[in-house]
Image 1 (spheres, rainbow, N blue to C red):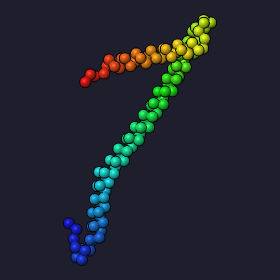
Image 2 (image 1 turned 90 degrees about the horizontal axis):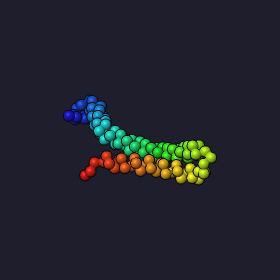
Image 3 (image 1 turned 180 degrees about the vertical axis):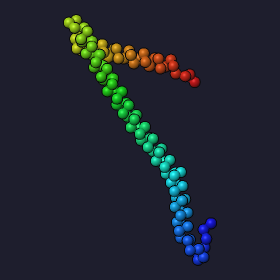
Image 4 (image 1 turned 90 degrees about the vertical axis):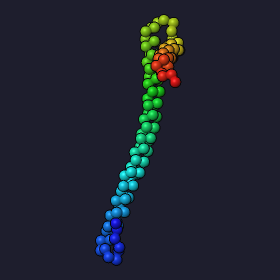
Length: 110
């Protein structure tokens, strides 16, 4: 217990140490946890946005690669560039449809 300032020569030092200790405990329990939570939210949002952007760029790359492959393998056939675009869209759409169907089968029913 903090003593009387008139009888204790170390009263000011003891009071400052106690206030400092209490502020430190409050900072450790409240402020540090709040900073951790805010960091988790911010980094989670950044990761989510980067993941979405990478997924979009990846789909564009897959579609463009399929267009080139279809044009390469058909060669001199009647499939031109515009039809190879449609064929690549059909292939990518079918793959996404199959993936979505597999995910729907694996979901847990409530």
